[in-house]
Image 1 (cartoon, helix red, strand yellow):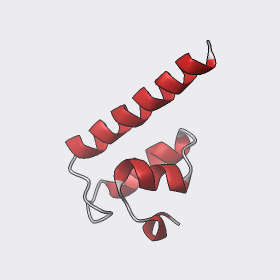
Image 2: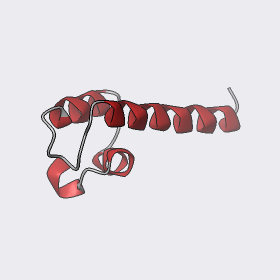
Image 3: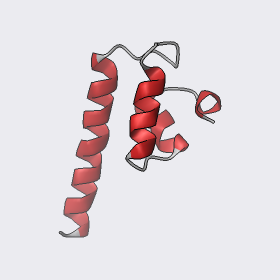
Image 4: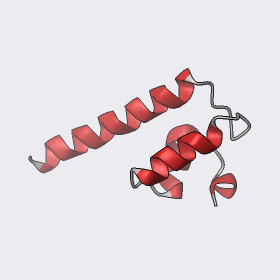
Length: 63
């Protein structure tokens, strides 16, 4: 897989994760499903900064 293909896949993965977060109604760390999303993303290797960027959850909440 070329670097370009890897970057495209990473971008799609982020977009898919964001779609998933929006579908279940995540809202700035206030939703009951928030921890579930965070745990799933962490288990897939996302850092706190990446999760904050994708979901809009504050970095303070994630740490």
